[in-house]
Length: 358
Image (cartoon, rainbow, N blue to C red):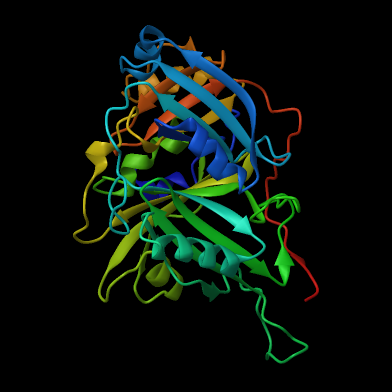
Protein backbone atom coordinates (compact mmCIF):
# COMPACT_ATOMS: atom_id res chain seq x y z
CA UNK A 1 0.00 0.00 0.00
CA UNK A 2 1.32 3.48 -0.85
CA UNK A 3 2.15 5.89 1.95
CA UNK A 4 -0.26 8.39 0.36
CA UNK A 5 -3.14 6.03 1.18
CA UNK A 6 -2.14 5.27 4.76
CA UNK A 7 -3.50 8.49 6.24
CA UNK A 8 -7.08 7.58 5.25
CA UNK A 9 -6.91 3.88 6.11
CA UNK A 10 -8.80 2.34 9.02
CA UNK A 11 -6.22 1.62 11.69
CA UNK A 12 -5.96 -1.50 13.85
CA UNK A 13 -7.05 -0.69 17.40
CA UNK A 14 -3.77 -1.40 19.13
CA UNK A 15 -4.20 1.06 22.00
CA UNK A 16 -0.72 2.37 21.19
CA UNK A 17 0.58 5.37 23.13
CA UNK A 18 2.17 8.48 21.79
CA UNK A 19 5.91 8.04 21.73
CA UNK A 20 6.73 7.16 25.33
CA UNK A 21 10.50 7.31 25.74
CA UNK A 22 13.64 8.50 24.07
CA UNK A 23 16.21 5.80 24.91
CA UNK A 24 19.76 7.17 25.19
CA UNK A 25 22.80 4.92 25.23
CA UNK A 26 25.77 6.06 27.30
CA UNK A 27 28.74 4.84 29.30
CA UNK A 28 28.25 7.65 31.86
CA UNK A 29 24.76 7.70 33.34
CA UNK A 30 25.79 10.10 36.11
CA UNK A 31 26.59 12.82 33.58
CA UNK A 32 23.41 12.12 31.57
CA UNK A 33 21.23 12.38 34.67
CA UNK A 34 22.93 15.61 35.74
CA UNK A 35 22.56 17.09 32.23
CA UNK A 36 18.86 16.29 31.87
CA UNK A 37 18.05 17.40 35.43
CA UNK A 38 18.72 20.93 34.16
CA UNK A 39 15.80 20.43 31.73
CA UNK A 40 13.49 19.25 34.51
CA UNK A 41 13.91 15.48 34.25
CA UNK A 42 14.05 13.41 37.43
CA UNK A 43 14.48 9.70 38.02
CA UNK A 44 11.31 7.65 38.54
CA UNK A 45 12.61 4.09 38.08
CA UNK A 46 15.79 2.10 37.63
CA UNK A 47 16.76 -1.46 36.80
CA UNK A 48 19.51 -3.65 35.46
CA UNK A 49 20.25 -6.59 33.17
CA UNK A 50 23.05 -9.10 33.14
CA UNK A 51 24.87 -9.54 29.85
CA UNK A 52 22.92 -12.75 29.23
CA UNK A 53 19.59 -11.01 29.82
CA UNK A 54 20.55 -8.08 27.58
CA UNK A 55 21.56 -10.51 24.84
CA UNK A 56 18.04 -11.96 24.72
CA UNK A 57 16.19 -8.65 24.42
CA UNK A 58 18.74 -6.26 22.89
CA UNK A 59 20.93 -8.68 20.96
CA UNK A 60 24.27 -7.66 22.46
CA UNK A 61 26.39 -9.30 25.16
CA UNK A 62 26.67 -6.29 27.50
CA UNK A 63 25.46 -5.72 31.03
CA UNK A 64 23.05 -2.80 31.37
CA UNK A 65 21.95 -0.34 34.02
CA UNK A 66 18.81 1.67 33.23
CA UNK A 67 17.32 4.89 34.61
CA UNK A 68 13.89 6.16 33.58
CA UNK A 69 13.40 9.92 33.88
CA UNK A 70 10.30 12.06 33.44
CA UNK A 71 9.86 15.80 33.18
CA UNK A 72 7.75 17.24 35.98
CA UNK A 73 4.50 15.34 36.40
CA UNK A 74 4.17 14.27 32.75
CA UNK A 75 4.26 10.47 32.66
CA UNK A 76 2.17 9.57 29.58
CA UNK A 77 4.71 10.60 26.92
CA UNK A 78 8.01 12.38 26.44
CA UNK A 79 10.08 10.45 28.98
CA UNK A 80 13.79 9.58 28.81
CA UNK A 81 15.40 6.22 29.49
CA UNK A 82 19.16 6.28 30.03
CA UNK A 83 20.82 3.01 29.01
CA UNK A 84 24.24 2.72 30.64
CA UNK A 85 25.98 -0.07 28.73
CA UNK A 86 28.93 -1.89 30.24
CA UNK A 87 30.29 -2.54 26.74
CA UNK A 88 28.82 -0.04 24.23
CA UNK A 89 29.44 -0.99 20.61
CA UNK A 90 30.60 2.50 19.65
CA UNK A 91 29.97 6.23 19.83
CA UNK A 92 26.85 6.15 17.66
CA UNK A 93 26.05 8.83 15.09
CA UNK A 94 27.79 11.41 17.29
CA UNK A 95 28.62 14.97 16.25
CA UNK A 96 27.70 15.09 12.59
CA UNK A 97 26.54 17.42 9.81
CA UNK A 98 22.90 18.48 10.04
CA UNK A 99 20.48 15.96 8.49
CA UNK A 100 23.01 13.16 8.70
CA UNK A 101 21.11 9.98 7.89
CA UNK A 102 20.69 8.02 11.11
CA UNK A 103 20.33 11.13 13.29
CA UNK A 104 17.57 11.37 15.88
CA UNK A 105 16.34 14.65 17.39
CA UNK A 106 14.12 15.23 20.43
CA UNK A 107 11.93 18.34 20.67
CA UNK A 108 11.02 20.36 23.79
CA UNK A 109 9.02 23.46 24.49
CA UNK A 110 10.74 26.25 26.42
CA UNK A 111 9.80 29.58 27.98
CA UNK A 112 13.10 31.22 26.94
CA UNK A 113 14.66 30.06 23.68
CA UNK A 114 17.24 32.85 23.58
CA UNK A 115 18.54 31.93 27.03
CA UNK A 116 19.10 28.36 25.79
CA UNK A 117 20.86 29.64 22.69
CA UNK A 118 23.21 31.71 24.86
CA UNK A 119 23.97 28.77 27.15
CA UNK A 120 24.84 26.36 24.35
CA UNK A 121 26.75 29.00 22.41
CA UNK A 122 28.87 29.74 25.49
CA UNK A 123 29.61 26.04 25.91
CA UNK A 124 30.63 25.80 22.24
CA UNK A 125 32.82 28.90 22.47
CA UNK A 126 34.87 27.33 25.25
CA UNK A 127 35.98 24.71 22.74
CA UNK A 128 35.41 21.80 25.13
CA UNK A 129 31.94 20.71 24.02
CA UNK A 130 30.69 19.76 20.57
CA UNK A 131 27.53 21.75 19.90
CA UNK A 132 26.23 23.36 16.72
CA UNK A 133 23.51 25.93 17.41
CA UNK A 134 21.12 27.41 14.85
CA UNK A 135 19.69 30.90 15.29
CA UNK A 136 16.03 30.93 16.42
CA UNK A 137 13.55 31.48 13.58
CA UNK A 138 9.91 32.59 13.94
CA UNK A 139 7.00 31.25 11.92
CA UNK A 140 3.19 30.97 11.98
CA UNK A 141 2.68 27.19 11.87
CA UNK A 142 -1.07 27.09 12.42
CA UNK A 143 -2.44 30.16 10.62
CA UNK A 144 -3.14 32.00 13.87
CA UNK A 145 -1.26 35.20 13.05
CA UNK A 146 -4.00 37.12 11.24
CA UNK A 147 -4.73 40.80 10.73
CA UNK A 148 -2.49 43.85 10.46
CA UNK A 149 0.14 43.97 13.19
CA UNK A 150 0.74 46.83 15.59
CA UNK A 151 1.48 47.20 19.29
CA UNK A 152 -2.01 46.01 20.21
CA UNK A 153 -2.43 43.25 17.61
CA UNK A 154 0.77 41.39 18.37
CA UNK A 155 2.28 38.48 16.43
CA UNK A 156 1.06 34.98 17.28
CA UNK A 157 3.79 32.57 16.31
CA UNK A 158 6.31 29.96 17.36
CA UNK A 159 10.06 30.44 17.42
CA UNK A 160 12.37 27.41 17.16
CA UNK A 161 16.02 26.48 16.90
CA UNK A 162 18.18 23.35 16.89
CA UNK A 163 21.18 22.34 18.96
CA UNK A 164 23.11 19.44 17.45
CA UNK A 165 25.71 17.68 19.59
CA UNK A 166 27.88 14.62 20.03
CA UNK A 167 25.87 13.68 23.13
CA UNK A 168 22.30 14.60 22.09
CA UNK A 169 20.34 16.48 19.40
CA UNK A 170 17.72 19.02 20.52
CA UNK A 171 15.10 21.18 18.88
CA UNK A 172 13.55 23.83 21.14
CA UNK A 173 10.43 25.90 20.48
CA UNK A 174 8.75 28.80 22.23
CA UNK A 175 5.16 29.89 21.64
CA UNK A 176 4.10 33.54 21.58
CA UNK A 177 0.47 34.58 22.00
CA UNK A 178 -1.04 31.11 22.43
CA UNK A 179 -0.79 27.78 24.26
CA UNK A 180 -1.88 24.23 23.48
CA UNK A 181 -2.98 22.73 26.81
CA UNK A 182 -1.27 19.41 27.53
CA UNK A 183 1.26 19.76 24.70
CA UNK A 184 4.56 20.88 26.15
CA UNK A 185 4.10 21.44 29.88
CA UNK A 186 6.81 23.55 31.51
CA UNK A 187 7.15 23.29 35.29
CA UNK A 188 8.16 26.69 36.67
CA UNK A 189 10.83 25.19 38.94
CA UNK A 190 12.63 23.73 35.90
CA UNK A 191 16.10 25.38 35.77
CA UNK A 192 16.04 25.88 31.99
CA UNK A 193 12.25 26.31 31.71
CA UNK A 194 11.73 23.32 29.41
CA UNK A 195 9.03 20.68 28.96
CA UNK A 196 8.83 16.97 28.35
CA UNK A 197 9.74 15.79 24.85
CA UNK A 198 6.74 16.76 22.73
CA UNK A 199 7.79 15.22 19.42
CA UNK A 200 10.65 13.46 17.72
CA UNK A 201 12.54 13.71 14.41
CA UNK A 202 14.08 10.77 12.54
CA UNK A 203 16.43 11.20 9.58
CA UNK A 204 16.03 7.79 7.97
CA UNK A 205 17.74 5.55 5.46
CA UNK A 206 14.79 4.83 3.15
CA UNK A 207 13.87 4.98 -0.53
CA UNK A 208 10.44 6.47 0.19
CA UNK A 209 7.89 6.86 2.97
CA UNK A 210 6.12 3.64 1.98
CA UNK A 211 8.73 1.90 4.14
CA UNK A 212 7.17 3.58 7.18
CA UNK A 213 3.59 2.53 6.40
CA UNK A 214 3.84 -0.29 8.97
CA UNK A 215 3.60 2.40 11.65
CA UNK A 216 -0.08 2.50 10.74
CA UNK A 217 -0.78 -1.08 9.69
CA UNK A 218 1.22 -2.79 12.46
CA UNK A 219 1.34 -0.27 15.31
CA UNK A 220 -1.91 1.61 14.73
CA UNK A 221 -0.40 5.09 14.40
CA UNK A 222 -2.12 7.69 12.24
CA UNK A 223 -0.34 9.37 9.33
CA UNK A 224 -1.19 13.05 9.52
CA UNK A 225 -1.03 13.65 5.77
CA UNK A 226 0.54 12.15 2.65
CA UNK A 227 4.32 12.63 2.34
CA UNK A 228 5.24 16.23 1.56
CA UNK A 229 8.30 17.87 0.05
CA UNK A 230 9.89 20.54 2.28
CA UNK A 231 12.84 22.58 1.10
CA UNK A 232 14.96 25.69 1.20
CA UNK A 233 11.96 27.80 0.14
CA UNK A 234 10.48 27.34 3.64
CA UNK A 235 12.20 29.52 6.21
CA UNK A 236 11.71 27.16 9.17
CA UNK A 237 13.19 24.00 7.60
CA UNK A 238 15.86 26.08 5.85
CA UNK A 239 17.14 27.42 9.19
CA UNK A 240 16.63 24.42 11.49
CA UNK A 241 18.01 21.86 9.01
CA UNK A 242 20.61 24.22 7.56
CA UNK A 243 19.44 23.63 3.98
CA UNK A 244 21.70 25.02 1.30
CA UNK A 245 20.10 26.45 -1.86
CA UNK A 246 18.41 23.78 -3.93
CA UNK A 247 18.06 21.24 -1.13
CA UNK A 248 14.88 19.54 0.06
CA UNK A 249 13.62 16.51 1.96
CA UNK A 250 10.53 14.32 2.07
CA UNK A 251 8.58 14.55 5.30
CA UNK A 252 5.72 12.65 6.93
CA UNK A 253 4.32 12.86 10.46
CA UNK A 254 2.65 10.11 12.51
CA UNK A 255 0.67 10.43 15.75
CA UNK A 256 -1.14 8.06 18.06
CA UNK A 257 -4.95 8.29 17.82
CA UNK A 258 -4.84 7.97 21.62
CA UNK A 259 -2.43 10.86 22.29
CA UNK A 260 -1.17 13.42 19.77
CA UNK A 261 1.68 14.24 22.18
CA UNK A 262 4.67 12.12 21.33
CA UNK A 263 4.38 12.86 17.61
CA UNK A 264 6.98 11.44 15.21
CA UNK A 265 8.37 13.19 12.12
CA UNK A 266 10.31 11.22 9.51
CA UNK A 267 12.63 12.81 6.96
CA UNK A 268 14.28 11.42 3.83
CA UNK A 269 16.89 13.86 2.43
CA UNK A 270 16.32 14.52 -1.26
CA UNK A 271 20.00 14.77 -2.13
CA UNK A 272 23.43 13.72 -0.92
CA UNK A 273 23.84 13.63 2.86
CA UNK A 274 26.31 11.93 5.20
CA UNK A 275 25.01 8.45 6.06
CA UNK A 276 25.80 7.08 9.52
CA UNK A 277 22.81 4.78 9.80
CA UNK A 278 25.22 1.89 10.45
CA UNK A 279 25.90 3.63 13.80
CA UNK A 280 22.23 3.30 14.78
CA UNK A 281 22.80 -0.10 16.39
CA UNK A 282 20.91 -0.51 19.65
CA UNK A 283 23.96 -0.72 21.95
CA UNK A 284 25.75 2.29 20.44
CA UNK A 285 25.88 5.57 22.36
CA UNK A 286 23.30 8.25 21.59
CA UNK A 287 19.63 7.93 20.72
CA UNK A 288 19.23 4.45 19.23
CA UNK A 289 15.84 3.32 20.53
CA UNK A 290 12.38 4.70 21.27
CA UNK A 291 9.50 3.07 23.08
CA UNK A 292 5.70 2.90 23.02
CA UNK A 293 3.34 1.22 25.45
CA UNK A 294 0.11 -0.64 24.71
CA UNK A 295 -2.39 -2.75 26.68
CA UNK A 296 -2.49 -5.10 23.65
CA UNK A 297 1.12 -6.26 23.55
CA UNK A 298 0.46 -9.71 22.11
CA UNK A 299 -1.70 -8.26 19.33
CA UNK A 300 1.01 -5.78 18.34
CA UNK A 301 3.66 -8.52 18.47
CA UNK A 302 1.57 -10.59 16.06
CA UNK A 303 1.11 -7.64 13.69
CA UNK A 304 4.82 -6.80 13.71
CA UNK A 305 5.67 -10.45 13.06
CA UNK A 306 3.17 -10.58 10.17
CA UNK A 307 4.96 -7.58 8.62
CA UNK A 308 8.20 -9.56 8.55
CA UNK A 309 10.25 -7.60 11.09
CA UNK A 310 11.36 -10.58 13.23
CA UNK A 311 10.74 -9.08 16.68
CA UNK A 312 12.26 -10.61 19.78
CA UNK A 313 10.13 -12.78 21.99
CA UNK A 314 8.03 -11.00 24.59
CA UNK A 315 10.35 -10.76 27.59
CA UNK A 316 10.51 -8.63 30.70
CA UNK A 317 12.82 -5.67 30.13
CA UNK A 318 15.28 -4.39 32.73
CA UNK A 319 12.42 -2.48 34.40
CA UNK A 320 10.46 -5.73 34.70
CA UNK A 321 7.92 -4.75 32.02
CA UNK A 322 6.77 -7.22 29.36
CA UNK A 323 8.16 -5.95 26.07
CA UNK A 324 9.72 -6.80 22.73
CA UNK A 325 12.21 -5.08 20.43
CA UNK A 326 12.43 -4.85 16.65
CA UNK A 327 14.20 -2.86 13.94
CA UNK A 328 12.54 -1.80 10.69
CA UNK A 329 14.00 -1.63 7.17
CA UNK A 330 14.82 2.09 7.55
CA UNK A 331 17.08 1.49 10.55
CA UNK A 332 14.60 2.59 13.24
CA UNK A 333 14.46 0.46 16.40
CA UNK A 334 11.51 0.28 18.79
CA UNK A 335 10.70 -1.26 22.14
CA UNK A 336 7.00 -1.98 22.64
CA UNK A 337 5.98 -2.24 26.31
CA UNK A 338 2.88 -3.94 27.67
CA UNK A 339 1.08 -1.67 30.11
CA UNK A 340 -2.04 0.43 30.60
CA UNK A 341 -1.95 4.22 30.67
CA UNK A 342 0.05 5.76 33.54
CA UNK A 343 -1.74 7.02 36.64
CA UNK A 344 -1.15 10.69 35.77
CA UNK A 345 -2.40 10.33 32.22
CA UNK A 346 -2.11 13.63 30.33
CA UNK A 347 -3.09 12.30 26.91
CA UNK A 348 -4.84 14.64 24.47
CA UNK A 349 -6.38 13.67 21.15
CA UNK A 350 -6.79 17.04 19.43
CA UNK A 351 -4.99 20.35 19.27
CA UNK A 352 -6.82 23.13 21.10
CA UNK A 353 -5.36 26.62 20.66
CA UNK A 354 -5.86 29.12 23.48
CA UNK A 355 -4.73 32.67 22.89
CA UNK A 356 -2.84 34.35 25.71
CA UNK A 357 -2.14 37.98 26.61
CA UNK A 358 1.26 39.41 25.88
